[in-house]
Amino acid sequence: MTSLGRASAIIGAGTLVSRVTGLLRSIVLVGVLGSVASEAADAFTYANQLPNSVFSLISVGILTAVIVPQIVKATADADGGNAFISKLFTLGTVVLVVVTGIATACAPWLVHIVAGRANPELLALATALAYWCLPQILLYGLYAMIGEALNARRIFGPFTWAPVVNNVVSIIGFLALGALFGPVPTRAAEWTPAMISLLGGTATLGIALQAVVLLVFWRRTGLALKPDFRWRGVGLGTVGRLAGWTFLMAFASLAAGTLQGFIVSEAAGLEASATVTTNAWLIFMLPYSVIVLSIGTPYFTQISEHAASGRDDEVRSDISRSIRTLLFFIAAAVAAVAAAAVPASRVFTKDTEFVTAEDAARSAALVLLCYLLSLIPLTVLFIVQRTFYAYDDTRTPFWFTIVQCTLIVATALLAWALFEAEVLPLSLLAAAVALGQSVASILQTVLAVWLLHRKIGGLGVRSWLAAVGRFGLAAVPAGLAGWGVFVLSGGADGWMMGSAMFGALGTAVIGLVVVLVYVAILAVFRAPELKAAGGLVRRFLPGR
Image 1 (cartoon, rainbow, N blue to C red):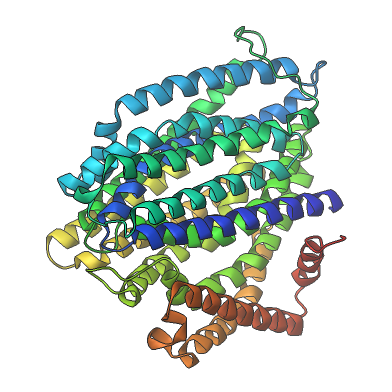
Image 2 (image 1 turned 180 degrees about the vertical axis):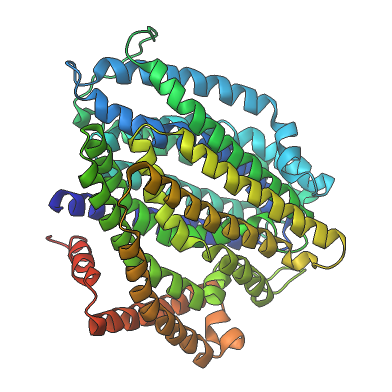
């Protein structure tokens, strides 16, 4: 547990800094382009999401699900896995180059697929930006392959710290855009080639440097990586079979997300649309990334090692311990984000000619709350899904993800139908789509837990539920205390809504109150998870 705690601390610290600088990046971008009712902001969001979507397809579909367990197993080879990893990286790079070339050539069609309901001027700007952004597919893929290889060798820090470089470069580029062309127009038709080049070039340069940074740490793996096009004889066929299911699973998720974006593009440049959902998801992902990835990633490596050696009892123990530890932190995060949803959203809004920052924040907060409903289920799903991967079972996750995707599509189409029938206003379309995704994720998690229980049994679900009960009894009053702070500050008309800076300060104050009340209540309950969580937190402190 000492090594797991240290690894979690390293990952958590890097992820926290990465996410905080990522928040600053988004704040600066909103300050330059706006968010609600901004054609320029929505155009950049759609263009920049294209490589991110393909990266997610590669990362979730192949790397996380397949590469880490296979590299862990390859370390037992006589050469320490050198031949396997060199061939794997060579093949991966070839695939990435081909995919990047095809995607860039198809930029206009891809933009229409994800944002087809938007107006022609917005689509034209998004296409121009997409030509700059789509080469990021290759860069993201290289970053992910190298990073997952480092993780598999228990070198956890660089993968989580490297995005800081990207965020810093992006912030500098966005500030330069504002300084050179400010006030930057929100209407797509007013953008010039120089503005497009600076914004798109900045985004891609940041990803390139993010990938290069990881190469500095490669020597620590002890692996001699070199091009090797002899792809037969080292087990790549097994990787291909495993990756087939996970790739199809990730493709289904991408298709469902694309439909969501297409529907939400109905509101692009008018109401809460792509930029708002992206920023709401960014806030949602902050606790998920800092907590779930920092604690869960080392557990995934350990679960893979125990599963590979047939120690099922230890796998079951890892699952129960990791989920209870994760839920301790996540329950507090849910309460804090829910209480601070409005001021947190204010951080990502500004006044435009169409909407005030305060009204935009209220619209964005509703989207955030709808996403937030699925944070606890997705925390459980992180461990459950990766346990299937540790047993080289990628087919089962495919099927329960297909169920989720089907529900996402159905709920998104329902939201669109209600809008077309004039039952759902355009201002609530994005929130309705987010709510549908949360419902789908909750049902997906229930199904996944049931299937894993059938596979290995003894998951300790009762202990999870007991822990969730304790955490809930503490989180609800803690969240209400935080909401009370917001109300006492003046609520939607108070100082927390005065500016993005005050919104961030208010969010911090509310979060601190929620955490203090949450921990105090659990201390009264003498919750057993409190001691273990305290040990993890102490590892983040200097000198530990």
